[in-house]
Length: 510
Image 1: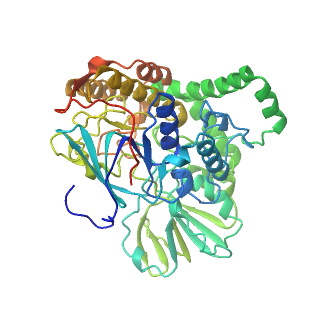
Image 2: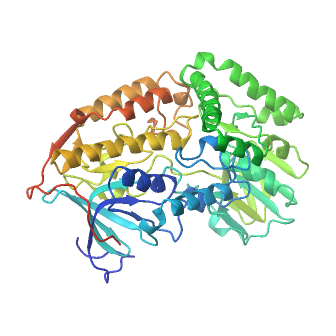
Image 3: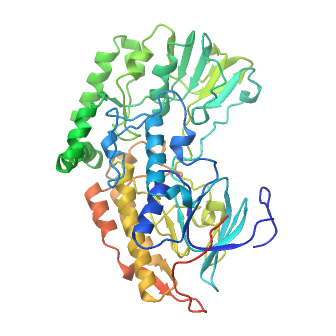
């Protein structure tokens, strides 16, 4: 494995396992359950933190919650009696922990174990992994780190010299007392929409710096009575019908995103929501987007606009260019005093944190292979990286599809691939480069006519300059159909020199 790197402990023994799952969030928990159900019991999850939960563990900002209906943000095999139509972060985290415990997923997790590098060994058809707790080999690696993983910190001159508290919304500083303070919020994305109404009553003044206004749709959130869940528990068909209603409502919103000529009714609804929520014409004008709805992430809230109209909140329709002492400087020349700065500047959505440490058949890091275009066949397989599967990979999500829906379909695809591998006598599968290229070309050709590509590359959909690395351009139905039909002919199948077979058995990793 080579010399140890910073952070690695060298006192651990080497282990071999069947499948290593990297990350214990929504995707990692589901992966373990799906793999075991398919007969792959030798599964180990490597989690760099001391607790499972992924983005729902890390994001603790006030008001953090789900932006799709709760009944869609659950595993189909683990229904939950949600307390609200849109679940909050604490309830989602409890749900993940409870589901993991119920299915004994927690027993497979090696906490405080960060993967530093993984290298494909052509001679043995194994992945060699180096972690902060030692080394291991695995026949299959499933990357389940998710797209909402690494906060994006802006490069603002003078920010390091700010005398007060500065933190990213994804790493909320709960020791920072906001009561009676002057708070500068940089950014107006989905996180700001959620936490601003929560902190507004505490602060003496909040200055919100908006570089680009957002389309905001109404979101009717309300408590869900326990009587409803008792009824749904007794009548599974009713629960399926409720899920179907929410699913097809989301899909109906998705149709005009793929066919922008149909967007006018949605945009009219959003403008009406703005007009009825904000009476001040100047503020309403500053909050009105100048791009088509759906060109950026869809946002829904009934509380954001009212919070912006409170006397202690001021919107600055300008980006932040510098910080001088305790003053935040806007591109319009404004100087705003602040005691606290909250950076609500999003995530490195298109990036894979481990990409620089994933080495494929030719010893090339995935980051280098993706330098010009991050591509993966069906968002799952990357040519030149055998027995590696990405969960919620490039171009697999839409603006409306719930992540668990995509995730479960993807895991059915992965387990079908591994079942075929185990039964065939081969030890490695690698998607054909021409298949990957054809999929990539068709996908980006289809994206040209969608609303996702109308912002000129300025939204977080564009993980690379001019390249949409996030969106699936077709319907969810088409996505599920493609993932349901695993095609062996799309892959190159091979045996290791030792003719080793994919089988269960092993002693853990990390």
